[in-house]
Length: 189
Image (cartoon, rainbow, N blue to C red; front, side, top):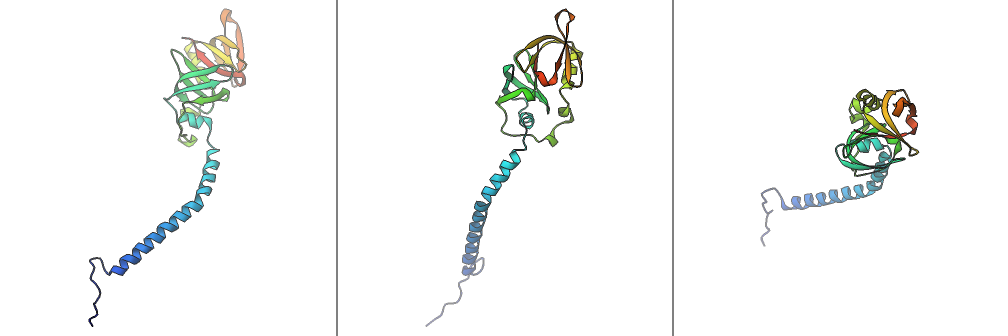
């Protein structure tokens, strides 16, 4: 009786391949079990992290997209989202611009699925509502200031205080509108 010696294999002994294949299979099963056990934890973390996402950060990721903002006291404001900051956004529509206070936004359609964290925003995006209103005052452009209660006030933004805008209306009549009552400013030209 002849006993056969080990079969030569180009990568080594054949049983080693079987052992390595078995170990690879066990490792993949262990990874799958670990992933399955961590899935609920990761989902909880994801939900927890998402609660930190602001409307402004979603809008920041939506720049240059066509959106429709539903604004309290105004209604639907459709257009291209041109600028966004923590307190306001600028929507360019058909021949008119809308400066919208984010606190007056009830809903947004057409926003990106992503969000841009505040640490990635440009310094210009950190400017408050007074900044674009001052630019509007410098331009002398006629506009309509729309308030949360649905009232429209036509005129020219003449000055901007810390928490209000001064509007000069027809006949030179001056009106002060508190930022907290302001929903949007619509360009007239």
